[in-house]
Length: 329
Image (cartoon, rainbow, N blue to C red; front, side):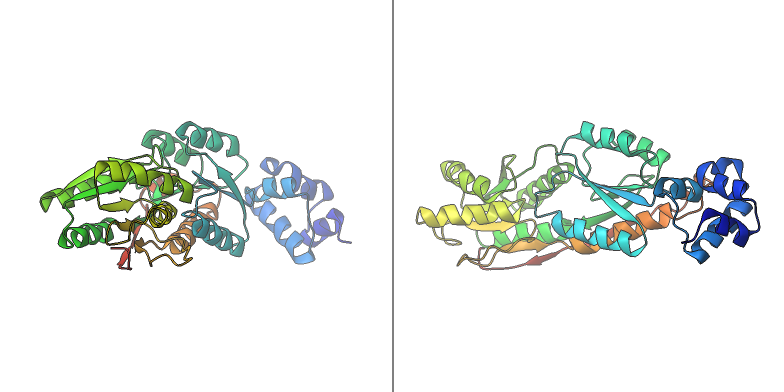
């Protein structure tokens, strides 16, 4: 078994110096630290994880904060981020903020000093609060673009515009937007896009919700849509859209003849004899991979890097979405 004394001999330093590298790295020069760590790696010496983190100036941990772990929307993102960071030698901590802006910032405070960086997926916190977190450690946002923070976003505007034009062409003039979840910044943007495009084409959009991202919540929404007399609906979530279709079939309403249904994402396919859903394909797996690479790139930079360097190399990556026309419109 390799001991710390073996590492000291290999590095050409005293045992006390080698011990300080893993216990009090601030007392050892950067060049000597690098020599000792290289010797430890060459010999296969495994230090206590906390001590090694101190010596390396890194915890080896990255964080991912999502608004709702149970949402199908975030499942491919989580999987892709985990694969990317583990491939780069980091471990991932995943935390559910339950869609609460205050929780997002509290999570960032709790993880400060314990992780080397955080990805915030669809964050709802004020921009100033996220910018403050980014001054403390590397931060990447997904589906939220802020001036001084690296980000990956999926552009649904083109696909949503095409979807609205499709419904107008089919003869629909009053279209429901079934929105949610509460506090979602991207949801507000999607509704405004739908209202603008449909309004410019002589129609109107009625907003309902917020609705939880579940099949049952979608099914329960059918009655209020029928009371409003609408025959076309855009749901923010595929689960909600499938719930609507289940409920319509139960009461004998035909899709799309009696009710045209579309969704802003296609991240679940329930099937079970339901018509194929007209939906906007969002590459959330790719978004997760790209965000993971961005965060690893920041976290892997040597300690002591000029913080102003990051401000000059901010990345805002925007991935395209695609409208897939199914049988429900």
